[in-house]
Length: 289
Image 1 (cartoon, rainbow, N blue to C red):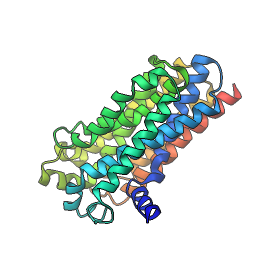
Image 2: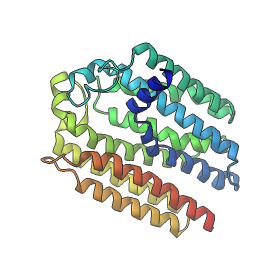
Image 3: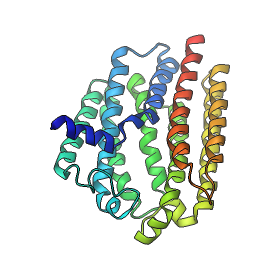
Image 4: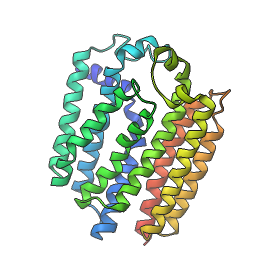
């Protein structure tokens, strides 16, 4: 019974989509360690970065589903999710959230003091995000900040500090996330308008929303190019940035204001591939250097 409930929760939070955030967290950890410490991160640090990311994402996604359960019940696209469908109770989800946050706290305590000191800020962002769609169309950027904390947290985990390079990585990932979240929100634009919810597509229209998403992703690529120039990285990282730019161009070619039928491919497949590509080429770069 317990295992069945856990399975339902993992399906509810799309646990397999951790692929979005984990590669960037590892990228922050490895890049930070090499650039600042001039050494590879230890396996212990990588382990606790992984635990922290799993805990943080699981808590955040579960909170989102819990907080949005009444909204989800009204939306035909989301009405079959576990909580509105009655597959799992609020109390069971709360227990899972507590356990997930406990994992995050444990991981931070095993890393360094800065990681512990930044925990309240990270938890605040993870909690606040789910409420932002109720009062601001900037909600996509709050989600971006939540995901951007992954690579920033990885950097902090292995270096115990934050510098300009770490913040550039944070903002690049934040804009990447905001861009694809704007694309994803296009499918609910009409519903959001009816329910008085806020998003860029519901505020400015789907066509303008896709333009803003393109702008976010253009700035993402610029951010990664800048990271290449200020971090003394080699041609391999640059190739990764170029491949990622091509992926983003293809992603945007899949969605049009009048045709969102390929939105899920653009959202899930392309962004999962991009995060893996950026991490893989970062690793190749650092190994070959």
